[in-house]
Every structure is written in structure tokens, then in C-alpha cells.
Length: 121
Image (cartoon, rainbow, N blue to C red; front, side, top):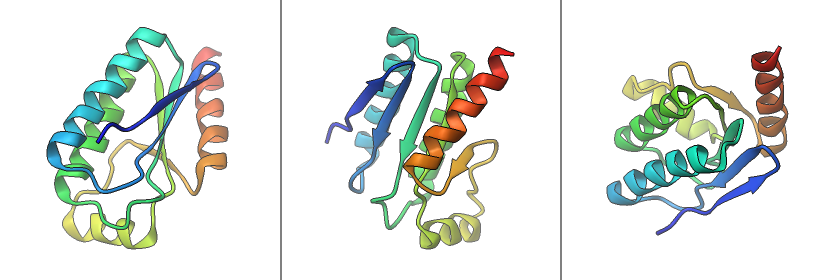
């Protein structure tokens, strides 16, 4: 399954709409990194609203993707996490360390814009 990544001005928006296989998750990570690099954007919002479950591998992929995108010079916000997903991540000891989060997509974009402004000043 290919996860769409859309460009909106100087940011990218992506929404993971269904559970991904491990290979799909790795493909998503590669696609996101390539898109950040080639489109020279300032940030990426990853919307996971549709995910009811995030296993330890997917949590690792999201965390690593966020860190890799920051190494490329862009900011990242993960948004839309379901309460059950947050609970599961904490119980597994796989919290998203150093990853900015927001309640929903609208707040995610606002937070990303704020992070970009701070970086530019």
C-alpha cells in the first residue's frame, strides 16, 4: 500500500489510513524521506488518526522517520493519535521520544508552522 504524501506550500502532509505491513512501513519511511529531500520543504505532518493499533515496529518507524526528517533539516509533527494507541505505546515502553505531537490535523499544521517559525528566527 502506498501512503500518499501531499505538498502544501512549504510543508508535506501524509495520512496513514490503514494498518501497514512492515514492508509498507519501511516504504512509507523511504518515500517520506525522499519527498522531504527532493521537495525542499520545511516540515512534515504525519496524521495517524485512522490507526487503532500501532505495534512496536510501526512505533519505531514513526520515531525514526521523525528523527531522520529532522536530520534533513525539516520539522515533524505526528497528529491524531488515538487514546488506545497512546496507552499501548506507553505500556510497551515505545513512547515517541523527541517527536512533536498534536491532537488533530489542524493543530498539527499549526504546531508545525510554529516550529518552522522558531527555527527560522
